[in-house]
Image (cartoon, rainbow, N blue to C red; front, side, top):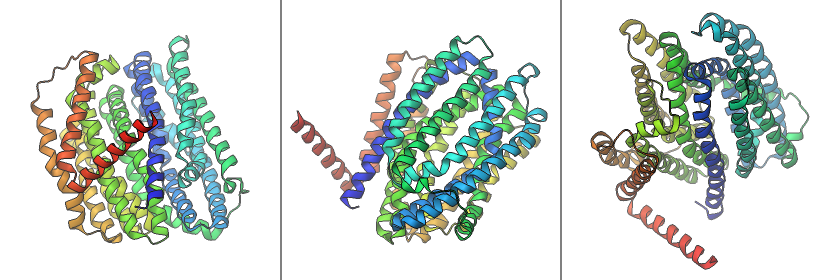
Length: 512
């Protein structure tokens, strides 16, 4: 890697981590307050109802990914005029999509909420408030996607960090109001969350207007660009349908067969997974523009280095964060939530296992999207992931499986899908299967027993105090780090880490 590119990735990762720490601290704090204030049932209702409109907006992911790819690719080529035309076209498409989602949400989606979801009659009015606010929040998010793509493509990750400070303050303010406002708290929360999202979106858009000239381009339709973007987005629809299926589809299945209390447990599990995965996603977000730009200028060797590094180090980072949670899961949930809905412990463990696959998945997805040759990838990967919901439904209907088994279906299909990604993507970017196995998979397999055995056999109590829990988490993270350094890293990588730490310490001493 060239020094300036490596420095940029490191700087952007640090800025994203600052953003992430703010969001995680507030999310974990507010989740406890919201769960205790709303109650388990209302919390479950919020998760499943707001999920319906997310399910309807699957096209947003396809178009957003296509727009982000073309913006980053064109920026890498240095074609400013082309970038303006692409941004304008993408923005037009997102306005149309936002209108379509609003209409679908207020017709098909509303019918589904009223006639299919399991919601107590006395909470139906509140659920409808949540649903309508979720529609408006989604519309705002869809229109904002091209602006966020610009920030990421220009690698201005500091903007995300600074604006997140405002977001944190607003969310804390919402939680404070929620506790004291005497009206229906589920309705109040839905409205206030919408207001916060609108304010944050406006700030992001203003940032783009003041920093990127292409964001001021008048709205105009360019048919030839639209065709390229539409073809690319069309092939991603299958994959994004699958994503919606295994996120919101599973949520709805659990609601239909087990009711809103199970949705509350899954909502908490998703939050834990999201909090841990944010570390990895920030790393991937900092690297993604460089992967696309490297391919755009035919620097395939640098691109390969980034793909392998983001896979391996992303997974190790995820392991350092997830391992202590596995060790002390019951104490973590008891101290964090106070009220722990049934199934939460098993759901969190399964979601963390799925999360460990995320760095491997995202690195290959970034690589295949950089090439633009995604037809075969989307057909095979998307189709395999689409099988999660119908498979779980059949097992629920015929064999009456447990909620935990539904989540295990998700886990095993995700493993199968990762094998498909490896099979398709590696030849496209000229990485051999043996290189991938020896540099990424083998170190993970060697680490596996050292991580699994302590979780299964260490007699850690379920009712640790806060101080004991902090000590256990720190010890678990240090143990995972030690195992990674000793077993997961090569001699050259350990030497690089030693030199890096030594230089940092010397730099700090020189400053003092």
